Length: 315
Ligand SMILES: [Zn+2]
Image (cartoon, rainbow, N blue to C red):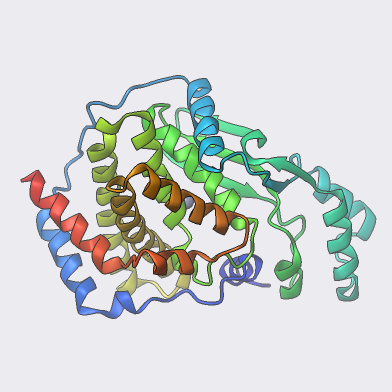
């Protein structure tokens, strides 16, 4: 059986999941700085307003529409297991390997295309804070070429935890996962995949209330520290590659997103629009994430020094 990690790499067509940053002296220094200086105690975020999930959805959709400039992007979608059950009814539970192309064509013809803002949102206010873009592989099999060929088909977006200003950013974050993933290969590196969603989370905060930016940044810095601790522990104790790459993904993507957001925040309106339109090129499949990061000279080292500066102001 294909393991989950191989299946994920094949589906999204990530050709790498490593970064020299984690072997660098820069990373070791950053890790020590974080462990020595950032308090582990629970931080309370005082200016964050509670609101209804209705408002979270409305504001999230408005922000995505504004930043995508209403370009007509639709994402593959199926309602619950409707498409999966149809495929299984037609091709059986264990179809022949030589049927793969026929199955993929069938799926492509039968899947719906939906605006990302119309994809159903499931919420659970009593669970710990989390967001998820739920995708449907239709059926499990051993053939890697099936996963390379199948479109990324959404079932739903799920939002968990309190409904407040932060949840609006999380909803936008999840919609940007859906929007980027639809172009397989928008980035070659699995470790970069949280960059645009985390960046858009910060942009959302700027759009709704500029005074919340320090809190949103601090929240992300605390999550970097959590991931650094997890990565350090797992590097000694785990041989499951996903338990190493998942915290690395959040650390690296967060640093890149913080660097990009800092440029965005200090840009004129013209500069902001330009960054926005570069991101829309990624969504349309006209540029890769790496090309846009190169254009603005975004690096994890620059992100790390912004984090250090921010932590020093906390003392
Ligand atoms: Zn994410």
